[in-house]
Amino acid sequence: MRRFSQFLILGWVLFSFLTGCSGLSLAADVTPPPDYTPQAPQSSEPVVASQSSLFPLVPADPDQGEAIYLEKCLPCHGEKGMGDGPQAMNLPNPPPPVGSLEVAKTARPADWYSIVTSGRLDRFMPGFSESLTDRQRWNVVAYVLSMSISPDAVEQGKTAFVSRCAECHGEDGKGMGTVTDLTRQDLLANRSLDDLVDVMKNGKGGMSPVAGMTDEEMTQVAMYLRALSFTALPQTEISQPEPASQPDISSDSVSDLPLSAVIVNGTVTNAKGDVLAGVPVTLYVYKGMQVALEKSTTSGSDGTYRFEEIPYNAEQIYIAQATYGGTTFNSEVFHGTQVQGNEINLPITVFETTSDPASVKVERLHIFFDFSIPGKVQVAELYILSNTGDKVVVPASPDQPALQFPLPQGATGLQFDEGELGSRYVALENGFGDLTPIAPGQGTHQVLFSYELPYERKTSVTLTMPFDVTAAVVLLPQSGVKLQSKQLVPMGQRNVQDMTFEMFTAGNLKAGSTIDIQLSGKPGGSPANSSGWISLVIGAGVFGMALIGTGYWFLRQRRLGQQDQTDTDTMETEESLVDAIIALDDLYQAGKLPEKAYQKRRMELKKRLEAIRGTKKE
Image (cartoon, rainbow, N blue to C red; front, side, top):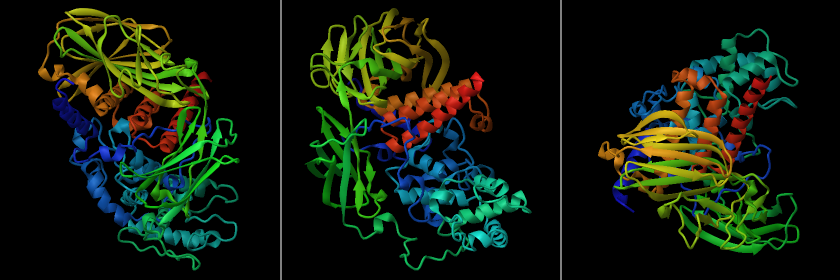
């Protein structure tokens, strides 16, 4: 790989710049276990995240969260959470003022937990799912929420609650009889302060509106209820009587529970929900990036499998894998911190197979050009594909791959990000084929490759679409070469470090259609703009994904007219939601989002998009 080590360093520098937090090591936060492939969605229904991601298993501790915030968050968000940290100026947009009451009033803790877990590509915030435990992430969320809640307001809220609400809910908020327990973690984690005020104003279910309280008093009551969901607020003591029949675990993390072994079980079913007997199942237990344990069995007559006396450690990751029809299918990833009781349930859904690729479509196609080699243009193509059917698409035979990719005439020097010809890929007359099965689901498959074409001042490149393409993005380094195409729409320029790119887009391209590109001009420009970055895209996928994220951030900013941050956050358009979905898919495909968080967030964005489109039709 030409000058690979030199530009690998450049890639990491660029990636650190894009995150805006140069002191963070993102690799530890986003790397999945070896050989892990995302499980396809099983239905069109919303995917419910695991219990530990919806609400904390034990009350979150703002005091412990403070130390985490100072180390992980302060560089960008600032000491008081006002978005003025020392690294904030490196970001294209300042971080939101999470420490302000106006922002915190609308914040649902579960949403902020999801952001801390998975990050936000559109705002260049990394996720911390690997470097912080579930408990630590909840602790830092609690600390951030407590920044805008003053001890005086909590005390005033407590006084108002006792006088106006305790008759039904009790002085400790735990409710009486059938009245709702307001200290429930699942309730408070999914309600903002404004949500709680809305219930007080308008009532809900059997609860009548609360009369005779001002908005300020209701907000103070909501702050008091929020405090009840924490172990304590800084400089404030909130007493929480413990049930006599239960041990006090408020200061213990899940990893401290006296558990040394667990039972791992599950059921193997097909896409219709039918149980399958006699299916080989293998359990993999990872500690860090190493396999700590591997055990195999087969599903019984009722489709269930069971592994007993599996060593337990909160730092371990558990994955079950079934082999069916010559294809492997994974359960969801289970983290040791999520365990409750002494059982881990890992259901596995398998699918029938087909060699017909009609259900395959390209969610996004990214095309990169590089002119660093005299007399040649290097082209990289990144396909992110979805299988919209209910069967796994597999090759009919090793020499008849279902996924076939044409190459332009005269292409040479074919190379791949993963795999090579003769293993994952096979050479075809006008291109190559991919032998990897593609499971049903959104963005479940990725193909990244590059090739070279002759170039002397001008050339024409015809790219044939192997499948339907929802969106295509082309990045051209500004190096004296011009690009013209009837199918592509110019979207302007973007500067990243010392490299300037021109961006072009196209959408809704049909299988068999072409993108006809004319390149002209003598490559020139600064060395930084002709440094062989295509080699880095192929050799270090993180660089390519960082550039893709940059492109979509830039696209979103253009579409929103470079509005100020407040307007950008509050104004939601069809275009901005589409861009958010695209960025989310890219992040998930790069292995930087857990399956459940990705599916939940994507479903939310799609519902909002459908709502906007429905409004337009009306």
